[in-house]
Length: 77
Image (cartoon, rainbow, N blue to C red; front, side):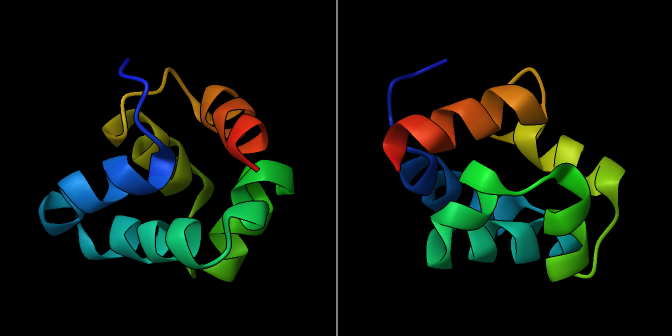
């Protein structure tokens, strides 16, 4: 795991993400608070995706799961 911000990681891989994960990426950039304080389910609902897609997005960014992504988002917030 690198020390770059979530937004920087999103920009690095956004073009490689499937459409559903790109919607989560857009939320991560536009509303970082949604990742910092939202649940997997709330992020899924806001992006019209599924909970497993949110978890896969976290993995695509290099996190071991959503809790690790969320902790990083909280630290950045």
